[in-house]
Image (tube, rainbow, N blue to C red; front, top):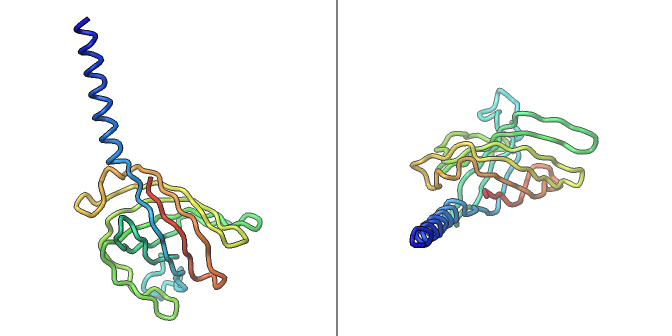
Length: 168
């Protein structure tokens, strides 16, 4: 009887520790994202031709920079499907000049991939995964492998995007 009681107590203690650990490691990060389309995308004569969108994302009350690099683009019917890599920077003094991104260097603290779709009504959403977190950066490296989600709307000008970015 004592062995059974000890086993139950040990199991309960392990579940408590596991639940506490997963709650802290599994806390979601989410916040607004505000992006600009890089009119220089794909133009090798510009400074940052690899980036489609770049801007800011607010996570845990802090503002970071985020940029996207497409890996696959396809239009099917009225929808536009894409796959991309994204990069969150702790420091990056980027600037747009006449719609062209003129700086694309900084300290990457988290990166990942996603796939999504933009509909004819300019709504966009996608899902992905965190593939790397800088262990010396501001984010918990346990976020590597976590799922991501974004959703929002492209402005009528087609050069601005506002929405929400989330790491589960």
